[in-house]
Length: 342
Image 1 (cartoon, helix red, strand yellow):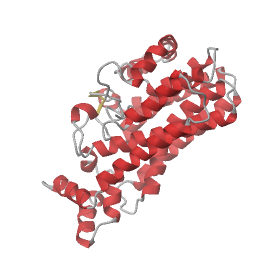
Image 2 (image 1 turned 135 degrees about the vertical axis):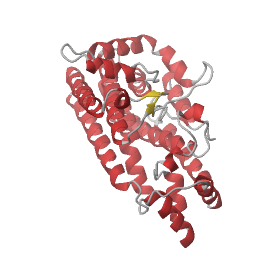
Image 3 (image 1 turned 180 degrees about the horizontal axis):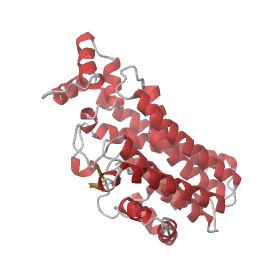
């Protein structure tokens, strides 16, 4: 399940008993307040295109996982105020802004099963509306009145941008290592997961060891989430991913299963990766051959085990936090992220 990423990144749920749904039920009033605040703050008196573009993405059925993590972390740490709603909306605005920018950079045509904003309007609108949402997010951060919260979310925003630039430089570069891949994943996915959890503990004035635990949980959950999404591209159904199996290969993306296969490749095999990924000269049968090479070197299984390891790390990180229903749901969520590949 990937928590959102476009149907690139979107958590797919079956039935109504998953940890996310139970968390939604437990935090229903808070989530209603977050959604109301999002709708209010995405408005613009002078530029009607802003709410048009924003609503197209915000109202497209995303699960709001990241703001839910902020709400859960705050309540789990005993918070009884209202500023966690502003921080949850902040997290969603940052996420939505990055999606708008990503679709331009990736030249994407579909997200969450719908045409992307840049396709329906244009690249300029997507970039500028994304900038507007970033500005709105910083307004909300300031309103919370906590310098440390501002520091956490501002740093996360910088890491996200840094990760996107790193991904550009690493794209189609066969020298990309697993370490670089994890740096990219931390930027594009895990940084906001970690910040969303951490600010929940910070606004609740939780002990520092609990705040650190929430950061580690979010970081590990985000990494596991992204690895699972990348793995499913080589074996998941398009209905659950919002994309076709092998799209990452066709788009020449160096995800972990491919990076591991390239590292083990013999001379002729490396020449195949140079042609298909580095030079982009793909032909019929190349995806099947890529799959055979990944099977030969067992990199799909290796990737699966790494995703499970990160999910287990996420669960273990919550040790300093007292047991509660919300803590149990967060642990179950980590298991659920990897349930599609377990």
